[in-house]
Image (cartoon, rainbow over all chains, first blue to last red; front, side, top):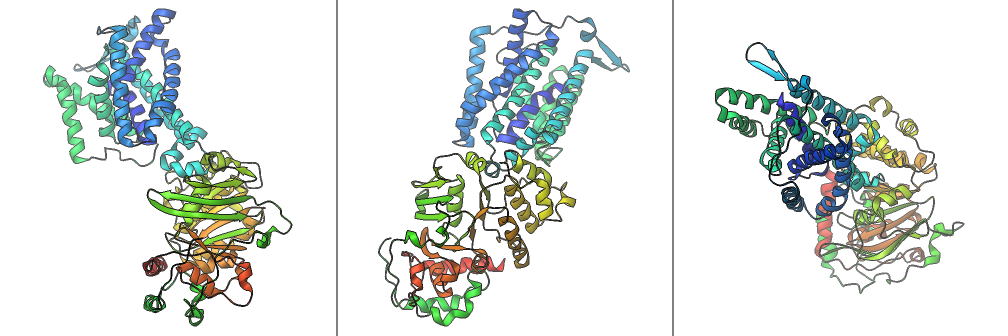
Length: 280
Length: 330
């Protein structure tokens, strides 16, 4: 079930790579930023934790557009390697900025809704928290929405066109930088949502982004296959399930099991379980 | 217009055994004897007589004007002070062998390459530094070399993308379907699954739905069977009827001669020949295409021409030849 969360983390990463060929190393940190922004928003406005995304997601989307049009685009104009360095730098800056402002203490977004924090059991072995179920459902809805947006809407079409061929898109009058900005806005929006979900499920500190989230997102993307949204979901689920199985064997094997699957996929099927067919 | 460099008599002898079959000036093969007079004297290089632009009659302003355009690819000078003026309603053909700079010229006009020198004026305005997407929306559409369709999109989606920022005008997706009758039935197919000729048609349709005033066609015949090329060029009158101006680049000289109202030949980034197809002899075209020094036609025709200088190195002809025969065998 935690796979839904991983998929939510990963879809923005996958989108940014698919469209702009940017491997966003700051992706995990952005999720954490989303979490902290939610903490801030909640303390200021006292809105329920569950609804904080209404403010945080658009805020992060705007940040995504602005960052893409300025810093990331400037590095894209130079080379692929530069984007790696720039997003890595962004990651370091964000991490230290958060340490400065929020200290190294962990935060979480406590949900004080009794139903959501409780869990139910299937059989004797498997118990599922309603919160995780909710996150999973949200992830599926987000992926469905994204899929629909990319395949049906005008901007989705432009995003796919730009991902296919930037120059040809320019010849059709499309400013690809604007389209990149929109794609980044979507990626930042989804990762903010994922960050909030993570905050409800667990707790985060400034370093959680690169330590945990980025790696999980990468693993989910690689297992599922780059550029495929459903592959991303599948990758997330597989990662989640293998971690759960690992935890059953021994508590310390939880993450190890996930990465063993990750490695196995890399070796046996490097293109991912669902190979990239289209951008959708 | 730099000094012409002399070439020995062995030059003409060298070319015979490497006769290209196919592409290049295929329609001109029969004039072999005449061209062997090459190397005698050359037409004096000089200023193009601006008044002689035949299409100027009635239309005062060129819709597209390129002046002294120089483009570098790194250290390589791909275009060297190229000038051209395209008038409304014209079919302006640029011919030349591979590597002559034709595509670079078109890409620079579309804005995909930046010139190091020179200006591009469209509709009376300087667009030299305008971004390609702005040029596209103001009415310069290009069918790029190699078609460059959005491969993961369907036929219809490709056309829709082309129409996203379209100007107002006669072309709609429906009208493109009328022009290419097969397209409507297969509009839900991905363009990756289409044949080369079909892809080229979609690429033309994608450019047309933007309702451009100037249509740049880059090497339509590339990689297509002659029959298909004929069919696609057969569509040109219908396209022109909607009031477009066409600037096309073509390696297939006979095809270009058939459709063009004005001709310009490039060789290694320089203009070697310019004029109306009817005023140009096959020998002159061949000489300009391969960089041979041709004798002037001697019957007063050279007034309509502007024989620029060629400074190609000796090896270039045979290089062009091998490239041509390769293109022809495709």
